[in-house]
Image (cartoon, rainbow, N blue to C red):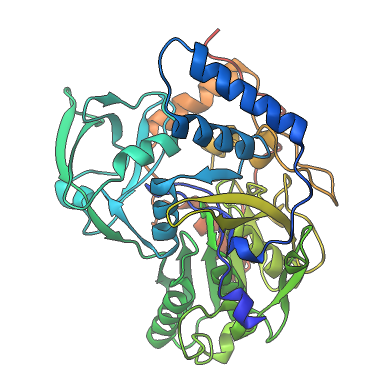
Length: 474
């Protein structure tokens, strides 16, 4: 089992000027024989190919037609299956290692349709140039970004080392747009950070599950216990964690649970996808010879915990939250998570291309399916004291077209809102807020988590109004 797991990969989705997803890497040679091909349909495909070649208004390259046919066939299955061309495949492999060539910015959508800077990564080109949280990117070179999907804008920000790009930025308080001329470079992204919020109480944040995450987490925990050997409460922050490497999720959950507990299981058509993953080194170690968790303080297994989640917590972060919730090891606080409970396997086609195919659903230790449902917090707490902000308008798995169904539980309700007045009210409030820095003194949910650990009152979320997304274009 340990040997097989070494080839497995990611679980998640999201954007840190790069995208993570749920993966297991596997060779095509391991695939069983496929059924006989449907010859009549393939003849029809060949006929359409020939028709385009002979009758289309201008010549089209054979490679383009066939690549688009493959891409369309795979993408028609569900939102997370995809054909990976040379560039996409290289970016995927880079992202799992916690490094990529780019500008070094965490981004998200803005209410105005631009690309919003969540935060520049420390010592990156964007950070050194003075780009700030809350800045809005309106152009990349001569390409306008307003209305562009996040994934497409990420592709534009990526590039070759030492290549140059001009960012046009709108900044609150500035009359004119600002132009930053940046040079792309390899970005090493740390996925773990933490600190003592006050004596006896620690905050540990995981922004994405990467190959080094378990080692980095163990190092940070050891550092926190060195600062205060008598930690009385710990907040594990998984908000806006899009997922990542499966081993990372297993290792993080195993750090807080009794040894050898089941963390997650998967089920699909292939025998290799009918698997239970346990909190043992062979399930979470990737490259290290020694167990990163072996020297962690024993007190870590009993320290009172609150796990913070929100709509942006997906896949691998839902695995961790679900396991800790099932074993009643921690209380989950925040808002309903994204609901991505599927595993994607990478099947390499050529040296440079691959197919990312959904091959299994995953389940919590008690057998709950998270797909299109998510993790429901034990304690519902909004992002701000006066509401959940734009989180209330964010898309979740259940909102995505062609999403995989939940085979065990009722799916979560679609999260979008329908009343124009309510939507405009939320957007107007967001424009008045300064960007939220997780772990800061302004972090309302963190303050509520600390209250819970101290036995103080917690301000819970108000009952949600049932609303659906309004079409602002009409």
